[in-house]
Amino acid sequence: MPNRKVKLVADLIIGMDVKDALDQLAATVKKTGPFISKLLESAIANGENNFGIDKDNMYVSDVVVKEGITLKRWMPKAYGRATPIRKRSTQMEIVVEERVEGKNRKTKEQLEKEKQARLDARKKAEKEMLASKKESEEVAKVDGAGKELKTKESGKIKKSADAPNAGWANKIFRRKSGM
Image (cartoon, rainbow, N blue to C red; front, side, top):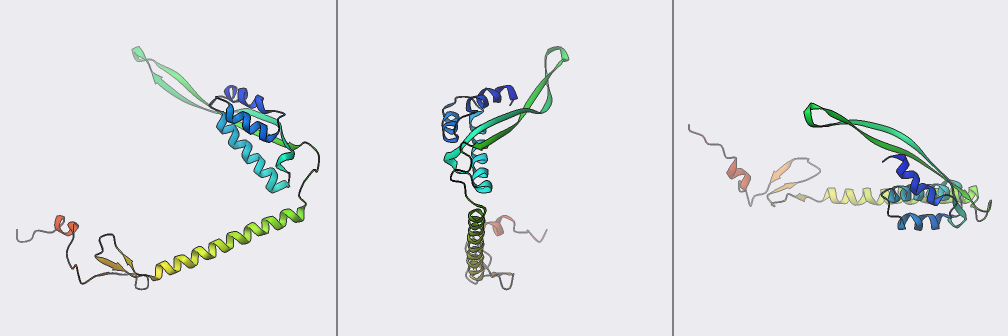
C-alpha cells in the first residue's frame, strides 16, 4: 500500500511505550494497523533476544516509512484506450530504544545461557522426533483400503492374501483382451 497511508498510522506510535503502541495499533481502524503491529512485535522480540532489553523499558523511538517499488499495470478503457494503474508498496523500519539506559538489561552471559538452552531444547526435540519417526517406519504401513502392506525394510509393496485383485481401481482400469 502507498507510504502516505502507512505514515498516518506510523506517526501515531512514535514516542509511545511498546505496550501502549501495540494497544494503539490494535484499536486503529486503518488497514495498515496489523502490518505495523507485526513489525513492532518483531522489533520487540529482536530487542529482547539479541540485546537483552527489558520489554517494560522499551519505547518506539522512530518509525521510518519509505516508498517501495511500484508495480505498473494497465486497465483497458473505452475506445481502445488503456489507463495506467500504479500499485505502490512501502518499506518500513521501526527503531526501538530503552527509556532508562541499562535498566533490567540482561548481561551477555545470560543471553548466551538462554541461547544455549534454546539450542539444547531444539536438539532434544529433533532427537525425539527422529526416534518416533524410526519407530513408525519400522511398523508395517497399511494402505488406505487395507489391501496392500508396505514394509520399510524391503521397500517393496506386498499384496495381502485376503484381497488379491479386489478394488475399484482394478475394475475401472481392467484391460479388455480378445479384440
